[in-house]
Structures are given as structure tokens and as C-alpha cells.
Length: 439
Ligand code: PFF
Image (cartoon, rainbow, N blue to C red; front, side, top):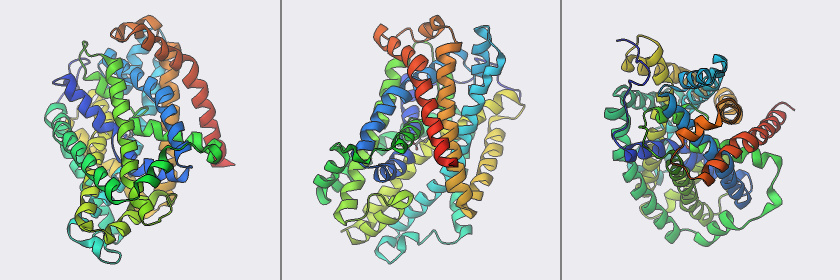
């Protein structure tokens, strides 16, 4: 099958379908797994406030920029950035912006699938009554081959959906699963607030305490904001390329970033009342939801069902994100090779699986190196490049044209931000992160 010519690929059926798919990409393990443990490790409410600041000041402008770039050029992230640079009379080497983002998104997928596999295994053990037994959460997650099998299973589902294409795959899954996700999230949060230590959780999350703030709090909050809103990973450029010209990008972006932030905060309200009820250390790190929560579910009435439902919820969140992560690279390969979409999805999915498998065998490689490379290096670097590209390389009038629905105020905020706020701030935070890593 021939490569897909520019502008001739599929489009979303409606703005609503786009919003659901984009919110599906943004809402994921970042909200349910990463946000709670980052909050716990970085001082609770102070982190939450700085995080919200990072979303508004950095992630939102980059999100608007990415969707606009994709919609304008109607191609994958790499081709879109190249095309726009050439249109602006600048060097085609600016495609580096797309390359960094695409590499970042692809690397995120490799380890994301490993964690999502564990989530699936825990959902299964919950529904099978595992949480009631000592160490029962691990009922179906013991030994490296089993862990690899769950990782493979999750990647397989991701591949099968992406292979079916935009409308038959990604859009269908998002429109079916996202409403279900919200209903389950609200139900579980109400349950947790009623039966857990709600007051303590609310104080922990929302009473400002700046004594715990360090340089690292900013590095962590920025990385988390980019990760959670799915920016700097080629995905939003790609999803933007499937958008029609009459969609209001500014208001859609605000909606996507707000929904994602709301889910992170609600997830905090779902998880911390349970954590505090049993007096578990909220700073328990990456394992917070995998070690702390199952122990709590073990002692709760109907804990198996509630626990199983919690991990099923996390699975839904994860799959609507992983399909976007794979789509970013599949769109590029489909465009530039003779591979059909299913072949591209299988090849890239397999490749991502293999790198993720390294993470199962070596946590030093997976949890530490790949997570650092994608979360603390490539995503901030990608965000920085997108901002410099939109603020300094692309003519302002071209961006204004693409964002024609935005009010003057919103556009002024956006353009000032990508030009003057995001590049120095992210540059500084990136250096802080590199310094912390290598010194
Ligand atoms: N935003 C997703 C989450 O919070 O789990 C993860 C993610 C998806 C990151 C897509 C980056 C991305 F491009």
C-alpha cells in the first residue's frame, strides 16, 4: 500500500470525538499512578499548586501550539514541523522538533506498557479475590515471564486498536471508554471520600505548605505536567492533523488541559483518603498504588471488587493513552513508507515491546534510565523546541491565522508565553534536572 499523501489522511468524525480522544490520551497512568506518587514524594499541596501553575503557563501553550501545527500541516509531527518551517522560509532541519517529540513519545510507550500490564494483572487478581490473601495482589504477577506476558498482552491490545485506524480504532475506543471512565472515577471517589480519611486527604492536597519546596519540586512538576497533558510527544500534533479547519483550537485545548487536571485532582481525592485511613506513608514512591492500595483493599468490605474496579479504571485510562503514544510513530511510518497501517502498528509495537522488556529485566534500565530519558529529558526538551519553533521560527501571522477562533487575549497570552516564558523557564528547569542527574 502506498504512503499516505499529505492532507489525505483520515479526519475525526466530530469535534466531540477529537476531544474525547485527546482527553483519553491525556488522562492516563500519569493521573492515577504518577500524579499521586509525585505529589507524595514532593511535599503534597505545594507540589499540587506548582503543578497547576506548570499546566497553565507551560503545558497549555505548548498544547495549543502542537494542535495548531498539526492542523495546519495535516501530517505527522516530523513532516508537519518540516513543512511549516519550509513554508516560513526556514531550514527543513527544524523537523528536529518533530523528531525529538516523536522519540520522546515512543520511549514513553515502552515502559508505559509495562506498568499498564501490571495494572491489568492487579485488576484480574482483585476480581479473582486476590486482595484478601497475603501478597494476593501479586497473584497473577509473579516471575519475569508472567510480567512480560502482561506487558505483551497490553501492547497487543494497543496494536490491534491502532491497526484498525483512526475512526474504526482510536475514535471508537475513546468514545466508548471515556464516558465509562468518568462514571467509574466519580463512583470510586465518592466511595473513598465517604469511607476513608477525607479531611486529612483534603488538607494534604490543598493546604499550601511551601516548606517542602526545592528546585526538584519544579523539575518534577514540569515533567509531570508535560507527561500528563500528553504534550511534547508528537501525539497532539498528530491528533491535530486529523482536525478540520473549523474547530476552535484554543477552547478545545483549555478543555483538554482542564479535564486532565481535574482528573488528577479527583484521583488524589480518590487515593489519599484510603492511604491516610491506614496510615501509609504518602511518599511511598512509584509503588504507592501497587503496594499501599492493595494492602488497604485487603481490609475493606468488598475490597476485592473495589480494588479490582480501581485497577480496571486505571487500565481504561492507560489504553486510551497508549494508543495515542503508538499512533504518533505509526502516522509517521505510514506516511513515509510503503507499509500499511497494520504493518506499521505491528512493527513499531513489537519494537516498543522489546525495549519495555528490558525494563522488566532491569529496573535500573527501565524504571530509572528510560523513565529519566523520556520524562526528565526528552519531554522538556521537546516542549522547549515546540515553543521556540512556534514563538520564533513560524511567523506570528501564520499562527494567528490557524488560531483564528481564539480571542485576542488568549492569543496574546499564548504567543507571549511560547516566545518569552516557556523557553527560558524550561531551559532552566532542564538544566536543573541534568545537574541533579549528573552531579
Ligand atoms: N498523558 C498520559 C498519562 O497521563 O498517562 C501519558 C502520555 C500519553 C504521555 C501520551 C505522553 C503522551 F504523548
